[in-house]
Picture (cartoon, rainbow, N blue to C red):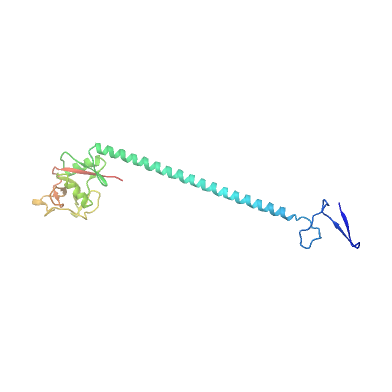
Length: 223
């Protein structure tokens, strides 16, 4: 409803408050009528859409990370299972070696014979056990042989071509522990094989005819 007011009988004003389809302007100048801005709805729609896209992106990232973590976990579990099975296999082999009379001295197993044979027969026995005559690579290993308190063949032999000493795996002798005055080919004998003794000194090797009878030490490397 429009109400008409008379002011000084010369000015007529109209009040649009009660008109259902009109809105007063919020302008400080007043008096004018403005229409609602339709762009606000579009802005809200864009903002909501952008927010949903952000949420979707976060969800995708979380899903990918969980997938990668799951794959890594499965791979780690598989590796751990394989290592455990390998360790069980080694422990089983260790137990078998101990029952067969082998002695462990890192990183190898050693078998000390209880009978005497020639150097070649001794080596054949070691080969049948999946090992070979002992190769001494360190002072600690040499000290280990002195605790056996037996004259024992080791895997050192004189080469037939140039007369140099070499180990059964073909490597040349570099570090030696010859006893005093050894090797000497005593009384002109062909002392082409080596035994280790249990002297008080660490240097205990002695060259000996390969046909002589001695105890022996087999060595099996452990991976």
